[in-house]
Image (tube, rainbow, N blue to C red; front, side, top):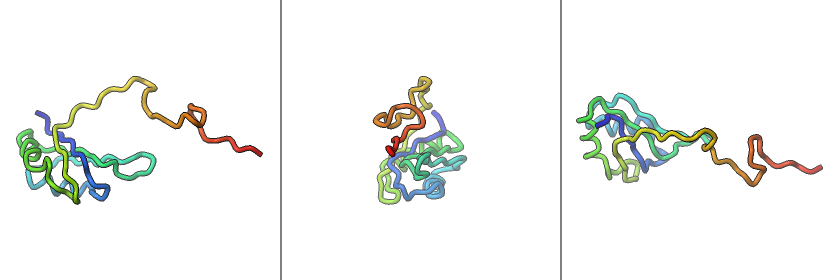
Length: 109
């Protein structure tokens, strides 16, 4: 089992320190990452916590999955490896403005 845990359903007010404090009660936390939106620089509502051992990670899952933090029931489980994406398949974008890079509307004069 891995030591890295996925933590979902986080409040947008939850900080990395809040996560660290919650998980430190169940073992040694070696790393905490709160995922942020690149465009708005606001939290995305999930993050990752790495515990020092797999046993501590299992204890944290048992104790915190479904527990309340900042008024939200946490989802805690073992983090899965990130899926590889095909080149050019990410990003989405706003196709109604012409599709490709640069986008935006052209103003008429």
